[in-house]
Image (cartoon, rainbow, N blue to C red):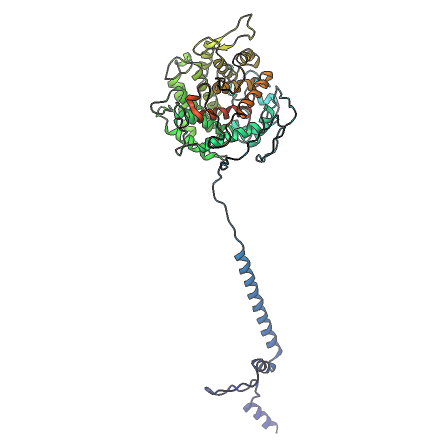
Length: 513
């Protein structure tokens, strides 16, 4: 009995699943698929059933998660703006800010549109502090030379651009420095709005090759001089070959000027160039070199300085004097003024400037100076064009050169009072009173001198330029080419000169307390 049972168990195993049937045999399943599955699974061990259930659940959750991730990924769009920073598009209907005596703006944010606001009269201080609030004596440097950047020679200095920030000698021309110094010097929203509008006009009318076409805008002067003036206007507002929304315009202008340079360093435009054009272009390239530090521009500016001192300047060695149209010609004060400013900026930019050339400029100024007598209410210190004289423009040029060559404020007060009294403060009228050349040198000089003369000059300058800048149409932001020398440099030169006048508050830092 016992052995039979064992034999039965070995020969007839218990059925776990119902018979499947022979190959090819059609079997009719009893009940539904679910009932069949239950019937088949019902006899399986519990751990098999549990494992299968959890595996199925895990698979279902994985599929759901993948579906959600795929759906979310499709809804996310990531874009990157790789477009170059461009200057603001021209808007003909854009209103111009016009403010009277604005309060200082300390914010670093870009300007926004506001309605016209009138503030109470603000006193413009005669003695301006430094922009970074450093100790004034350190900012001015040596009492005798005014600057802490020695230029060489007796009593001369690299006063242009002294001050700093991240940009070095020309570092106060950025947005923050511009607004801060404009507010301290007597400018504000109205002047800054006018500068921005002028730069937009210049940017819109730059030629593809980087120059400004003088003749196209009604001028007779060569493109080299006008391009130099326009480049100075962009540099004066802090735009360089490396930074600023107009850096491409600056880069193309500097590149075009480099193409005009002769092997000896002379900037020359065939058939039209003279000492004026070279000196203005040299000034612009020296500032561009100091601000942007682009190797090609630095090299070009240095070659221009070397030419100016060794080939163009009158005289040799210790007998050097001034500059004029051609090499070694007896100097005139008008051309010499541009050369002096070019050498000053070159020195600040770290370029090599021979001491003898600066001493020669001082000697030439001495030759053009007309000293006063005991009855002279202005105390003398007036300047002529080719020698001793008392011209209005030439006195403004002579006094400015003296300021940047180290003369004390008291020594120049009479000359400044003379040209302001005789030449008048800026006024815009069709009767010949417009003289941007006089205004340019006068503005730079009176700003440095300060005092009541600057207050009167500044108010007149703002009224003349801010109220007469063109608004609307293709000429929006420009100044009409009327008045003295306007037919020479045309609308492009007139606009650049007007812009440079309104950049006076921060273009060169104050020399005196």
